Image 1 (cartoon, helix red, strand yellow):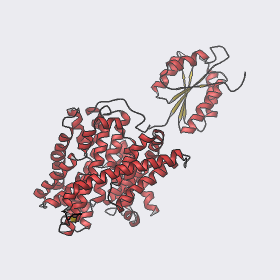
Image 2 (cartoon, rainbow, N blue to C red):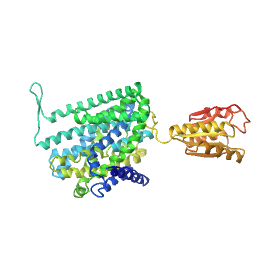
Image 3 (cartoon, rainbow, N blue to C red):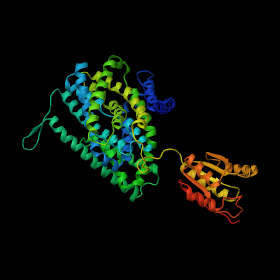
Image 4 (cartoon, rainbow, N blue to C red):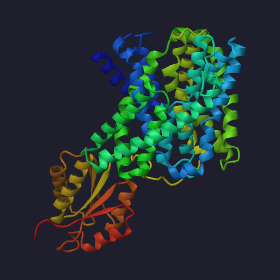
Length: 542
């Protein structure tokens, strides 16, 4: 079992990186690794790991949905609230119906079996859509109108709807007859008549339990201080979120996945600093969860079944997306302020399949539903076709179809390592500036740029500064720059060009201006720099 986990993590990571360097989505490489290591080809993954695949996938989906909730913007959702709600129902419902009709025509399914297939294929993949939308938010694409937030919310709601209908159809088809429920007063209702009430109850209780969970987390992690680090915060939050998902499986009266996403959303409203810490923690968890999710997804694909349904399966997928889902997108954005290009972006940003299909695609076959093998094959085909396309299309078409707006740093995770610019000179202050920059870099796992503006051509001073930097920054990734020009202008220019996090500079000197960055220079940098400036005073008397 341990050998299998090593194979999954290492090969999944490196092949994913190879795919990324070839300008393909990393998940393509991870899925290919799953196919190679899975029982269809290499048979390297142990039966114990394959047996735990559903549980591992559940954990991965929990992580990505918490990330989604922590990235939602209430103000943008208020602007596009009706669009988000319509995106949660209309595209999925239209696609499921279109696939049902196509399956009756092409596969000779009856309507209910075709609708079962439509519910599986129509579900959107949080594992592809959530990272893509959060990435767009971090870059500013579509944020002015809240398009990524509307897609995120609509995707979660649509999965709730389709999973409920799937469960109802599965019970009906496996039992061969409809069951009825008698209410007080002798009123008898069929499961189909109860469906609207089930959807409302699932969504309402999911949101309510998400709010309760967020309140509990704020109480434990902030008010009562049960944790000391961001890692511990993330561990506790992940435990509560996973508890919601597991509870929903045993008590299916609420949507566990929606509750997780709602918890992340309410955490932003209740305690933004905690939400920011958790955002970084769940980003780290997703690094591992993503590999496990897509490698195991690839391992679950049955290649021997794909060949028999390849062409007809592609036609079913095309009808579902280009006719059914496109109609749903049109109806969802009708009367909104979305432009034609923004509506067209939904084809790239709102059609990827992966997670749900991998989780439930094999259930009809296991339940003995007629056509279950074909359903599984088309579910696998939808993953292989739409997941890579979606992961590629979202960042490719966003700059062409969406308007770029201002990024809200309180709603996205700040990616990348911090970089500190240490502006030094030939004075004793250099030791204090380098020490401060080193301390900041160690605390945040950041890098340092050491900048010396040399207008005198003093090679001896440069050599001494390089020696000091090597001694004080020996365990830190740093770069030494020696430039000429106006001191203040060069410091600000380099800081902006290199997108540094902070400028670290000496506050005041007591030597001639040719040898030290005097107070006027540090003051000028402080006044002109759009980047935060940290002033360092000399730690010893001269």
